Length: 435
Image (tube, rainbow, N blue to C red; front, side):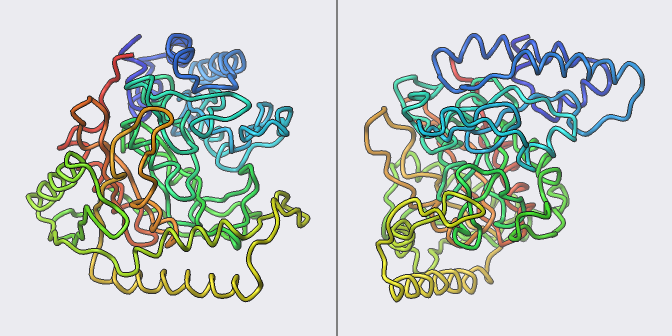
């Protein structure tokens, strides 16, 4: 059973389809693992165990009668407590929404269910919140998992779930993936619908935020991305762009820009060394790797600080500002101009490259309460809306994961995934925590 909870979602789907494993067997193994690790991690906060077992029995019955199976038939998954799942609390970690229980799935959740996946429950958000408390890192319980998709990353890393959904505004999929040693993808903005994200996201007002997959293995990110992608008829920002096959990407000939330092980022020596090792590996596989830093990258934090000073609506059908306006109308217009100038500058620069390689963060996970160095590597590519994958590529002297970030051109999520899979294969990838 211990091996079963460390199996990839892709392999679980194959084993279930060929009857090598029953769905009930798979579900029970993951529920047992959750029972063992969750009291220490505090990662799963709204379990759906009994309902999941009922669905598992029904899934096994469907196999027995020869029913047509979806690509994720019987595979367990979890969802961040910022994404609606019908019948389970979705509080966002905010006490005023403690009793909020949506009756409709977010489209991304509905699409996983329609593909046959079975929901294990909802995972904790932020490093700490007043509803559910603190989430802990499975590699060292005294350390932080980082970001708002914290519980998702911690539970997946520990074998409690093979697959999950997070969301990312400036690094909240990528930072926890780095800290917890798993793989995560921030897709191109507009590839997945944001309907059902809580708090409400207006993509016109906030083009930074995306929902995306998290898993221990890159192949699982690639498996679910086409299932999750595409318009839902409600989110006007979702675009009908086909997801290209990551297995058809040729690494040889890719033009890769790599940097470890910039105006607002100074990594630890081990972090920089990990990134350089990945650069050498890509070069050995035929990629054309050069050191280059994008223009205006030092503007990313100030652009984001200006964004945070603008109110957002807490409701989807009425203007319900979540705080007072701190910018004048002219300052808002200036901010939008500067943001657009930033995006134009980086897009022009990216014409010379297929991929950008950076550290995922300046340092590995830190003890709870200590400064974590912020998000200087992930933030710029939220502002541009480009796809970015994070995968473990090294280990700190303290035994903590070190991830790298792989950023591709817009709509080339396949390039980010293919390169991440190569890094995973040659530089270590996810490793079992001693938990």
